[in-house]
Length: 283
Image (cartoon, rainbow, N blue to C red; front, top):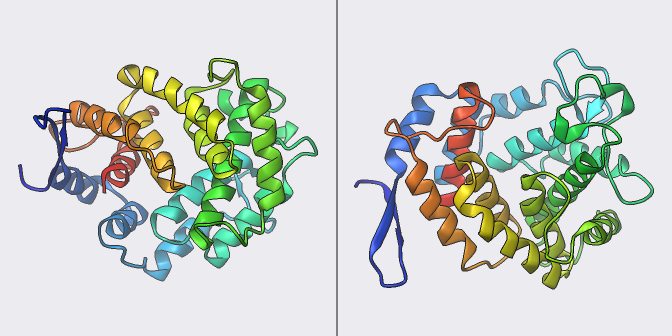
């Protein structure tokens, strides 16, 4: 299969094939300008055209974050992390726009090391971002800590000069205290892979490994979008993983649609985003 990524079993037999060409074609056919720019960077590392960065930055608020809705008046942790992921996909995570967002994110950390959405967003927030909810707090803290970590890795893989060091360390320490003895966590599935990356980079290697073991056990039942997001997170912060990623690639091969795309957890409107994430997971 042209443009495919093959995942092999321990005996060397081919067990899955991901059709990369078909996935690229799906994004080209259905993606918007930002999504096509993300595709170009994922494929070739090509810098995005200025208008693509400007399009992402269009809703950025003076504080540096993005609101939860187009007419929102308060920046959102969840929405800002989504935009940071978009910037990362076009190589602009540490651009001036990205740095403004990262600085706001760091400033929004609470005194105990956590992040929560502003209370006024309670009526708009999805379950994973509800202000004051313990599960949402663990998710947002892992997510925000992960993106500050990813920015530090992008600037310096050895993180000897991270401007967010104390912020990230306090979030990782708080997250470790929430883990159960078996490595599981009292929050949403996605919390696991963001926490694994955050903890590993803060030298909580044992705790990160326990989280990864739990993720490996849940892999067969994960949705394609979740598998792709997990694989991207594992690769983004240099986990050096050599057992969980092949399993993720196998699962992606099994769940790719005939049209080349993958299903999103949020419905067809987000299938292109899920496909871009899958492409980044296997590039």
